[in-house]
Amino acid sequence: MSVEVETGEEDFGVPDGDAGTIKVILADSQAIYRVGMRKVFALEDDIRVVAQAETLENLFAALQRFPTDVVILEGHLIAGTVDAIPEFMRRAPQAKLIVQISSSDESSTVELYRRGVRGVVPRSISPDMLVKCVRRIASGETWIDNQSISWVIDAYRAQASVLTNPRSQPKLSEKELAIIACITRGMRNKEIAYQVGTTEQVVKNYLRKIYDKLGVADRLELALYCLHHKILQSNARPVDVPFVDPGIPLRAKL
Image (cartoon, rainbow, N blue to C red; front, side):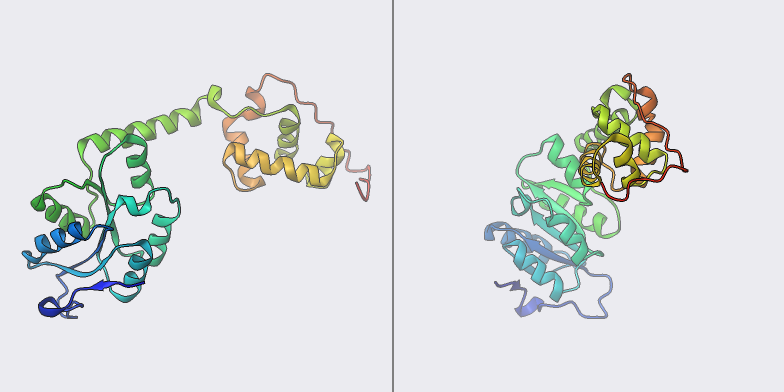
């Protein structure tokens, strides 16, 4: 594993007193793109390329060695991965990420912005636009074109519609609804198992499936989600959950 460091006249680090300089790492599998971008930035007094990387591993190594303001990342390097951007954010929370893509589509572009990418630009971007993009993102702005704005807005509208439309709610079985009804009443797994006539382990298995269906993390989120979206009230099927008499002892072992 190796990281290509800028040396010679440009040195590999930025002087401590040069606070106004934007420090950039170029992460690209193709050397010709790295060379081209380096030449573009070499003409700018306020932008300094501090390192180059041709793989994600090299990029993460460079982030450990060099303070960085902006990373320009080839989209191909993260194709097919789901954890690359979160890992980048974890390793370099102060650095801003620009992703270069060969072709754009709605789902991938929206997902990149959702994950925290500050700019999505084409590989064919002009030198002056790339410089402008780096400067704006380094200053804290997000770089997004008109088409991407429309895609992002449409995605959030669709998400809001899904959350508020009862017809789009996940389908739940009668037993799942019965377990949810027990959860909203504050019952424990042992009590739920007794009421629906099963075991605690089966209840736990059902809960995991319910969590996955509704996109919640625990029983508190489940209860709040179901109350907010009126899952039990809006469901047409009757849910029979017998009343638990506190005076009746539960079976010690199911």
